[in-house]
Image (cartoon, rainbow, N blue to C red; front, side, top):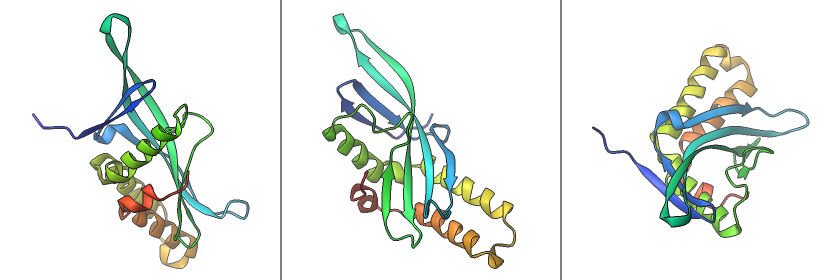
Length: 162
């Protein structure tokens, strides 16, 4: 039996419980700069449990899946967290809860096995699908972006704008 690493956030809707399991983190999209959108980005989907308390002190939980984007400019120098239009990890949260979520992402999530495995997996797939990376500047820059995601520090996320 192994001990699981988990974190929770108290919200007005209940306690969000995040568990570090590889299956709980999925990369839904990889964004590569275009003429209309000069940014690199990765859309991460996180599975977690929402523990709710009901009348008579009964508790139940709901399985939740929500997403957010980590976006960097073309120079890979500034980080922004973006909400997707649907199923945002930051949706229906007040400012304090949004800040707590951002804190959790910076202090815990980017250090988890689930996060590192998801990024490493997409990096490996991207490298395998682009064997001539030395010849293509865009491919090299995308690989740099993915490697930079593995090196993110708490401050990078905590200080990022949403």
